Length: 224
Length: 142
Image (cartoon, rainbow over all chains, first blue to last red; front, top):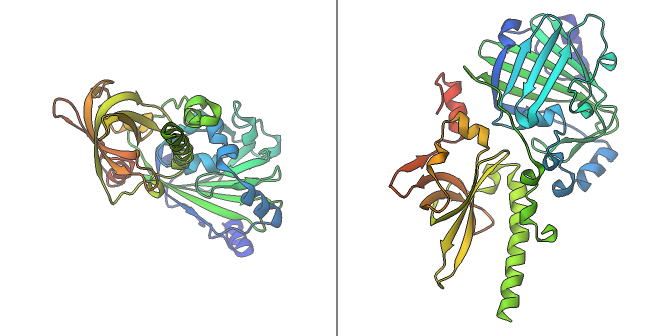
């Protein structure tokens, strides 16, 4: 609890001090109700990258590649699934078939953890632990590239990006508060709060993205 | 001359459509006028129920006796399945009337609301927002 209060004072981010629910409530399938994007200030380099962003060339979605965990969670309709185990947590995202495995091992630093998504190593390495009833996931090692194309199109991240995700249970509601820290492109940490509602009986389905369908190349006369 | 003009117009149309559809990937609300509706009658040329967006291509009759294509954007396949939308009731070759929210930029593009099938059945989809609202209010769907 002291840690959460200290972080709030230092960086001005309204982190919840404690969860209203129990950690077991995190298990389940969830759909996004709303995403609240906090204020952010970019470095000159971050501004330059954002100004140069061209979604037709730069959006990894069109190659069926998930840009980042934040970008994945911004997609409104495909749900996510959380499954907690003794030594790890699975987070399965329907969008782009991302299956993430986060180890829960006391003292394990994210930098020493294996890639969280074997299929997509650019999403980095993650390690989890509990802070009371809140699951806290720290991630590092994300590769430099596009951070977001939907919530805030054209945000980039460097390979210095570090994120902290706080999975906060509250019965049939769940919040995931993601704090992003990347001194190369952001002047200060910024947060995105994803608010979820439980999808009773929900299942994660295969997304099966095909680049030839995602890119809409057939509508581009230059490529015909 | 006329052919060149028509080809140029078609090329511009394709480019605009290309830009539009890619943009549409990012937001339905910002690209379709949800305050307006339009009935489009035509022959179903293609039905692509897929992720990340589905698309129906209609062949519609023009006043000059020719035909042109109208594109209907729709939700991703998984969302349609989750909302139990009976998409298999519509077939290639069917003459249908699809009610859409028109594109804010292009005259031959819209977002699906309902479809009246050849036997008069109306194919409905409540949409993701209503589905989400239903779940949030303790229902099993829309």
